[in-house]
Length: 261
Length: 160
Image 1 (cartoon, rainbow over the protein chains, first blue to last red):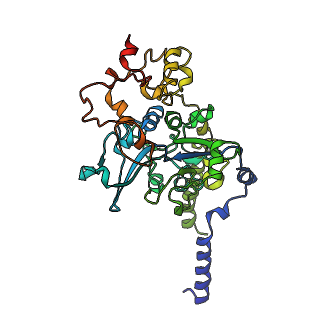
Image 2 (spheres, rainbow over the protein chains, first blue to last red; image 1 turned 90 degrees about the horizontal axis):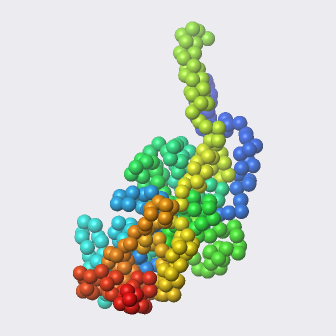
């Protein structure tokens, strides 16, 4: 028979053992500390979207899909353009037919099951286009939830997916507050915008930046004070999406309004 | 401790050892914590190079200039100067080796991406020249009248 004293002692011991985090059992690795200290490199890719300049032509989406081998007719895309039509009665209508791959060629707004909704010009209070892509957050929730280390952030801030390592559990797709991740229809792993990492590595721009005829999309290096994009971000009135999630997104917008989600 | 405790314990220890050995062979040497620290930088380092070494398809208009100097001069002297060649003609890849010829897209939908009139004030689209595609010669190709490389020059003049 176990005594009361023994019972209390053992119960406390077990509770203490359970509460001990796994990390406490890990041996200290000096390499890890050095890695964490030296994470301030000379490059941090950031993106700037000027919604005033976007006309909704969708050339960015077309170029992105082809450049990055995202099946052209599949209903998924690494980037897309949203149309916001805010009516004078306060109603907000949003659509992005086919991710705006073929642009916006009609005044009718795609409302899925409700069909195409026609809005007369007189009813419109304001209307505009908002390009969306991965925010390459400084605190990416998609990376935190990956159970196998398949998605990660590089030293220059881009979040990538290791296609050989991804098990396709889909946590990251659910974890992203911006909905930029999806399953690749061919590779069956998580897929996302990489800022065209292969083009950046060759000193080029992301393909959507090169495809945009109006300069609505721009990419720059936040660690370079002379970079024109950095100058705009640090001196002008820019905004980010869903700041309240604490993800610290690195895609900055000019001309956002409160209707944009 | 008694034998009936040790026997299952041996099995447990063997299983753990097998796990450790298997992990040693499966996990690549470059898998670990990298620049972004324990929380965001836990990955296989060589995957970064795999992404960086993908081929470029849209090689920008810099590669078009040398051979298509006339077309390039035409479009740069027009309101369409800001449109990259590859937006309408498709990605360059290894042209002229592969593909030998690029696409010539005469479809109305290509022009309507920008020139379907949408009266959205406060955006560039609202002030751009546009038509109602349902009433503006719906059966005709835009190119019958408009020269895409320089819409200011009428098509008749270009054809001569």
